[in-house]
Length: 105
Image 1: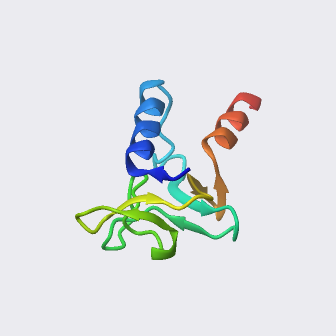
Image 2 (image 1 turned 135 degrees about the vertical axis):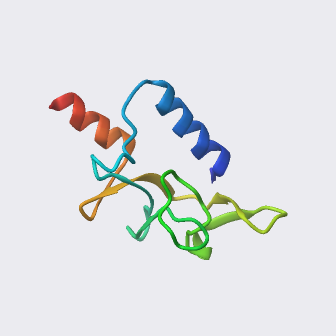
């Protein structure tokens, strides 16, 4: 199944509605990112001009990671095996990783 920009936005909105702190907050140092599970390669979320994004956007990902393109020429989804998460201190974390660590604290 492909992860679409709409699904990324929905995950973000659901997380935001939960009342939890946004992990893109610079105080925590978590930056939105994506990971290819097959190659273990990671990329920070960036806008098409290369500037860091404060939420998950598909624009700055490698072309090979894009599953579908929109009529406007922008990415609509990533290919299977690419997941959204966060980078901090050179390590990739999923939302579940972060939430489990907070619960264990």
